[in-house]
Length: 167
Image (tube, rainbow, N blue to C red; front, side, top):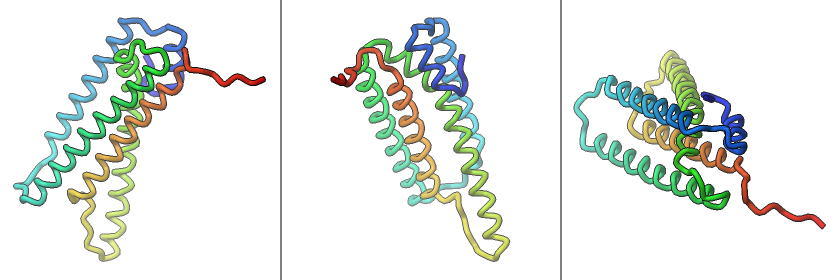
């Protein structure tokens, strides 16, 4: 089971070395990872939201939903062009290392933002980097990174794609 090396996973799928049992492990791990993310989100204290803040949250959910639909669709279409087989298994398996990379990237981004916020506050600036607009931007970037990375993993598969012929 690969937790980081998407390229190795692509090679194993290309060679038919990922069993149904292994796929189940990926599904279980991805599901638990998503559940953990939900728990962490619920632990964040929330004040009463103003109508404007609630609107930003709805916009964020809408954007994430659209990115998810388009991301899954484009991954599916790429899989169809390759060999039209095992889409769900491949998507689940690719999702785990990509989700871990996405999480690490998001945590690094938040640490950098917190560092700069403290620098700016020390310089006398009154800045608030966790406003709803910033949260929407981070969420959208996270989702885009995730689906683009999964799509790129599908691009690594090459079963029946037409190869250029050189004369």
